[in-house]
Image (cartoon, rainbow over all chains, first blue to last red):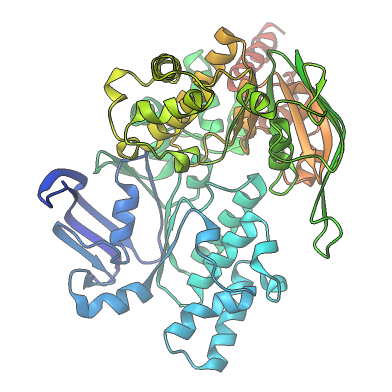
Length: 285
Length: 286
């Protein structure tokens, strides 16, 4: 298991509902027998409709939740063993949807320093970490600003820097761009890709924006708590009909290529980007 | 039958060190039955603008006329205005609070002074409009899925029978299918009930697909106000203000550069498909 950052085997998680007398009234199986490996250094995207179990699965990756059944290993450690909890939370950081819920500091650099300070990192090193993390998300020039004056995309990058400062091996991002405008989305995705490619941090990205998935090494599609598709973006997005049946979508360029093919234009499978589509259409001439 | 903003200015924290001029001399008329997309980057003034439409925020300067009547005039009935201009905030499901879906949707019409029976009738109609059937009436709103909650919350506003429905990012956080369902339903309401729709959105694809008119806000001012095709022609200016054009527009421009005689102003997948097919066919004939 040396090269696996996250490994789930037969993972099951059940939300239990209790009635007024405290009896178990209802059980919802949110994650159902998921077996999944994420290699160190990979960029993995998880897609799935609302309620498909993506977020529940993600919360297992830093032991916010522990499995009802099966096993989850993070960096080789079983998340059910409480002795590992601290190490697991340090090796896998999480970023959530709403940046306002994740920022606590009154100055950007203080907010980013909060994590390492809590870990007992020496002061001098905290400042070094704050500086490199802000640099990694391209926010260094805002270090002395107040977070509440920043745009959504900037706030979200500060939240990411706060996780990066803890030197995690892996970052799990749960719909980090859902509340952002187009520019904010672009900034955040650029920062996330840089962390993956330059800092070699493993990235697990949950999103509803298909354009953000194109650069992933692997795409995992979830439906009703199960992993139903797994492959490269090209493999996944060439199954337009199947994705639609799972309440998902494909990038716009892929959709346009699919519509053109349906109308009889001879285009190759698995077109993902605008450039690829334009190139393929030019080849026809 | 319209709502008209006449030289509206709004300043947050006037006279303090934190003074922000959020709306600058806005003149805008929303006509009956229009489907208007309102776009702009975070902080451009969109939300401040929509909060003026039902009098939640009062303009620092300027006038707003609803059906020709000045809403800031003495004795103007703000309560009535608020039931005519329905505002659906971001994440409206956070405002659900009742024990079951039907009671939640009844809250608005009951506050308008309707009897329980009448309110329930309106609520049931509204729930039908958003595609929530009888099986949902007595469920707790908190047990619904994300998309269902959002629809229940929209029904709560529809039950008051607004003439204008303003939705602030109604699809944020929904999966693609949930997004399409909500927007299709809104579009249907627009067509069947002739309700005026103002859709605030960060998705250029969505406004291109649904809106007939797009208003672009930048730094408190109206930058563009035109049809989607005309607005997205200015994609370079839009990028400068933190926005973009739909993906399709970029593909069209790239194809044009490579010698395809496609319609550059296509903004939706269907338009793009048709113009590419036409271009390919005309090439074959030559």
